[in-house]
Image 1: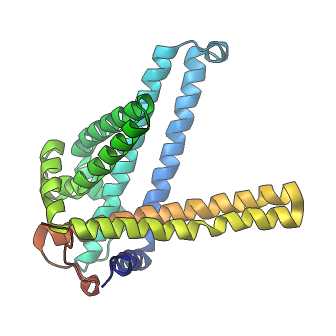
Image 2: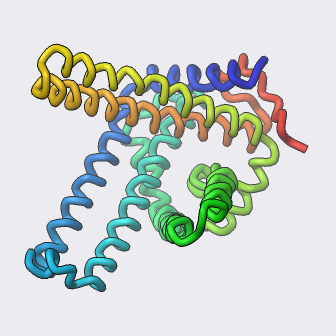
Image 3: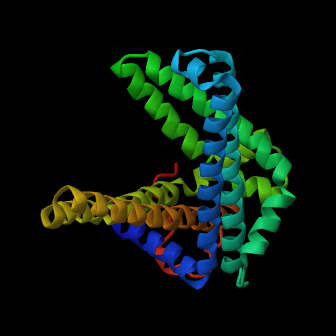
Length: 274
């Protein structure tokens, strides 16, 4: 089975899990809402604490940076927390159960301390990589981009390891890196396949804007943009849930060597492993 075909099949099977448990989509929705509220609180807090005039004149830099760091950390925490909840729900489904949103939130809450510590590490590494990318030349940006991709792969299974093996972030990173060697063909193919498929699904959103502009001029273009944004947000929620389901399935495969229920026809073979 070709890599593209296998990536498409992994994506379809992940979406099939979501179809059985549509309530899972509430988790990325809640995550997005909480993140927006955090952003609003950060912006509002900056203006209230520093004052509109000071912000306009570039004052309060230290307070601003401190607030930005806190927002960045909390947004990471929220994302990882709800990601853990989705993985929890998906794992229950893959093991033949019938999960609820409450089940996912319970699993995430049971591991909230370790999730927070992982958020601190992930946010710190993210800031360092982005900061270095802004300070180096073209070759440096390529190197830092490759480093970012490597970091993403190495830490791919950190969240399920944290919630199911009850270890700290550093041990989870080491465990995740080891598990990648067993399934990194499926990890790369599945993740890339899912990303490409949702990128293609996002393209019709542009048509809403074009059609709106053609029919109603500027007003129609604005209306089309609003529709496109709503469409893209829905796709983003589905993609986030599908990605977490895929992580849960690949974790089960890498951890036990058993192909998850419903994924039997994919042809797991770790084609890139040594």
